[in-house]
Length: 145
Image 1 (cartoon, rainbow, N blue to C red):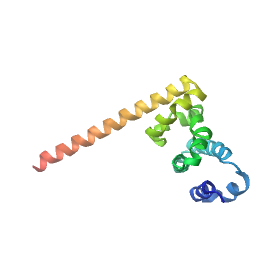
Image 2: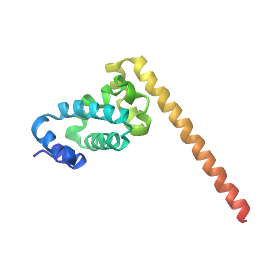
Image 3: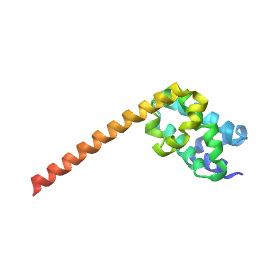
């Protein structure tokens, strides 16, 4: 059994039989995982979405699988309306920057611009949260000192 299939079964043990019987290529598996993530997101099942992206991260870090995950999964994400707007919650910024040109060539500038806006907004929220936490920390030091 290939390393990617073992990792897939480890990540989704509830679907072992399906993965063993129906997914014979990593590319086809990423198509299935994309649809699984879209469905799970629609059902509010963020755990499944996170596991899909965790498997994709693992593949991204494996030299022989890097191209497969980029072509079979990442490059098509802007086409998935439900996923595109929440990508910053699930797709690491550095990977997004790495695959952004591929996404743009496959999905077009307009689709990727929407993802860029989601990343910009996500960054603003993160900065506001960090600033608020820093103010609380500073205020706590003043009150105790």
